[in-house]
Image (cartoon, rainbow, N blue to C red):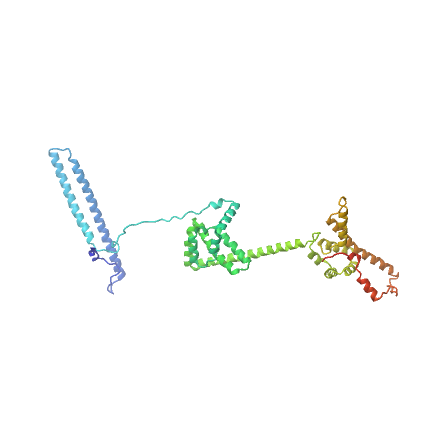
Length: 433
């Protein structure tokens, strides 16, 4: 049966009694507490002194019993008397000790001695030091490890990037501590950049939030020089109970990351557009390496109209009116850009000659034939221009008065229509704009 008698006498706490209104309660409680502490200290000292005396008496008894070994006669009697005296003293001290222990048992219990620890154990959680093996690797080795890591854990990283609550993120990382590393943070930033380039702005901002959490964990581990996996709980506990200053710093870091991602996405899109435009431009380049769009933009307005309408007669008329040097310059650029394709019949004739004489050393390549045809195509409008200029000089009178056309020079509308319907020799073949 359990004995509850020891709980009958309990000295209550020093500040639980009710006092008279005229008494200074805090001073009374303080005095009671100090008095109890002094009594306990005096009793403890008294007990310790008694224990020291008992120990000393036990030592004297042992020495006295040992001293009369081998003695005889009067010396033996004197030694025995001394031993009895010491034993009597030890007995008295033991009785005093028993009384003191009884007094200690009867003392009322208080808040300090009411209970005792059954056992005590201390655990020291030593954090693992931060892994610095990655710092000594080359860039190629780091890229290789990154690829291997992503091939193995890419699905888990994406799942972490889609989480929203801090508690869910903490639980996920504690279950998968291998994700707490720089490889995960790098992948989240690249994923955020790709989402921003795809104009998925809300999802990109969400992934940026998770990347900022991971970056804070890594920075905290770096400052404490410990393994990042041991900082997961510390970060999420702090961010959930942090003051306004800490949360504002977190939000500022998140906004800065989103801004950097947007700027980088815009730069990458501009570079991609330039690459596409350059590829299209390379495809458009003519045989001479010129861009037909650029060449067409530099042509005079009259020549542009000729190429837009594909009118050969109008082209000859424009060439006749232009300066010979300017006409030759623009026509050469049109051929080099592919706006003007030389006479196809000339190209076919050159190919037939090459097939008929395959063994001749003077055989021309396709590019050479095209260049010869280009020269003839440029030369023809210019020859027309020279011919028209010489005829105009013959028809011009000496005094500069324009010659009135005769009936022989005037032609009927039907004759003009027949002449306009004829295709000039230089227009035979295919021409492309």
